[in-house]
Length: 163
Length: 425
Image (cartoon, each protein chain N blue to C red):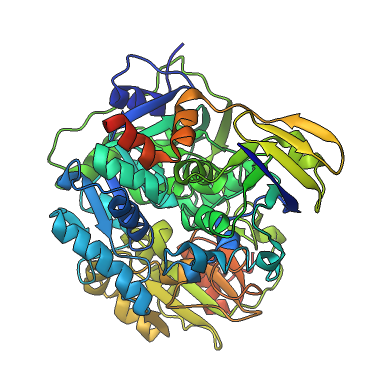
C-alpha cells in the first residue's frame, strides 16, 4: 500500500500528553480526539494537517502514558504514517494494534525536512522523499507483527485466528 | 547462556524452556487491568469486534481511579460503561468509589498481583508490580481487549539493564530519590524496550513501598518493566494478602545484561526532577530559591502509608507557607483509614493541608489540583511533561514525599534537611 503526503516534523521525546492532553481523555471519539491533536505542542498543528500527511519525529516518539487515545487522535486526523528514529514501546504496540502505520527509520527521520513531499510503500517499508530525491529502507517488521498489520489490527487478527 | 528474571517469567508463561532477547512470543496472563480512562476504549473495541465472553472473570481488574469521583458528565459516562461491562461479565475485581484506590497501590495491597505472575494493564505505570518479583507492564486498550478475550498478550522478550545496589539510604532519602537519580543518569529512553533488573545486597534494605516507587517509574526511563528479586521483605508483605501459590523466579548467574550499573544507596541525595522531563534531575547543591504555589503528596508513585508517614514526620508542628496549596492524597481507602487512625490526617489539616480522596486527578491534569499559567508545583507524582498538571506554562517538580513536605513548609523547593537540621542544604 502506498501513502503520500506533506511532512510535519516534530522533535525528540514527544510524549502522549503533548499528542493528546489528559483533559480530553473523557472521550473515545476519534474525531473529537483529533480536534485536540498536539494542542499543547502547537495549538495550530491540527490545522496544518491535510488528510494523508505524514508526521516525522525524532527519538522516543509517544513516550509516557499508555493512552491509546494518542494514536487514535493521530489516525483520526487522517495522518497516513508516522516515521520516527525510535518509538516508545507502548505507543509502538498501540499503533500496530489499531492499524496506524508507523515506520522506524533513523536516517529518514533525520534527513527529511519539514514540508517535504514524501511517498511511502508501507508493505515494503520504502520511504521516498520526492522533494529531496532520496530513498530509505525502514526496518522490517517481524512476521507475527506483520500478521497483525496485514489483518488490519490486533482484534481482527485474533478474530481471524479464532476462525 | 542464562536468562534474566524477566526472561524466565516470560518463558514460563509462554510454555517455553528458554527465550532470548528480541524473540516475539505469546504469554499467558495472570491479571489484566484497565481503568476509567483506558477501560472504555477497551470495551468499545470489545463490543465493536462482537466478542461475547471474557477468558476469566477472576483475572480482570477494572479500577475507577482517574477521573473519579466523576469530574464531569463524560467521565461519569466512562465509569458507567465500565460498571455495565463489569456487571455483564460479573468481573470479580471491579473497584468503584467507596472501595477504589489508585490502581497501582490497590492491586498489591489487595493481593491481586503476586510474585512470579505475568500482568498487563492499560496504564503505563502497571510496571509497578515488578517490585513484588512479577513481570508486569503497561500496554494499550486494544491489548487489554485482546487479553480479556484470550488471556494472552504478545511480547518482544526484552534485554536488560542490571542495577547492582549496595549500602542503604541515609535518613530522609527514599525510593523516589533513587529512581529519579537513575532516570537522571540513563535518560527518559535509557531503558527503551528493556527490563530494569534490580539486584545486589542493597535490595534487602529497601522496603516494599520503596521498591513499588522505584518500579513505578521504570516506564519513565522507557523500560518495559522493572523487577526486584523476591526476598524475605517480599514474603513478609505477601503474608495475609496472597493465599494462592506463587512461584519465585531468580535470574541465572550467567544471565546477560546490556549494561550493569553499581549504585551505593548511601550516596543517593534528595533529588528533584525539574521541568519538563523526569530525567532533568538536580540535587540540592544545585537548586536555587524557587518559589512554589502548590504541593501534591500522593499518587501511584508515592501515596502509600510509608509516604504519608514520612511526609507527616516532616510536616508535623509546622504550617504550610502562605500562598501554598498543599494537597495530601492517600492512595487507597485502607491507607486513608490508617493515616486517620495514626492521627496523620488531623495533623496535616492542622498544618494547613487539604486531604483528597484516592484519585489520580491532579497527577495527569484531570481534576483536584490543576495549575494555572506560571504556577509551580512540587509533586510526588511521576511526570513533569509540558501541561501535565494543567496549563502549558505551569511547571511540575518531581520529588519525594519528604522533599515535597519540606517545600510546602518553606514555600519554595526545599530539602527535608532544611526542616530537620534547620540547615538550608
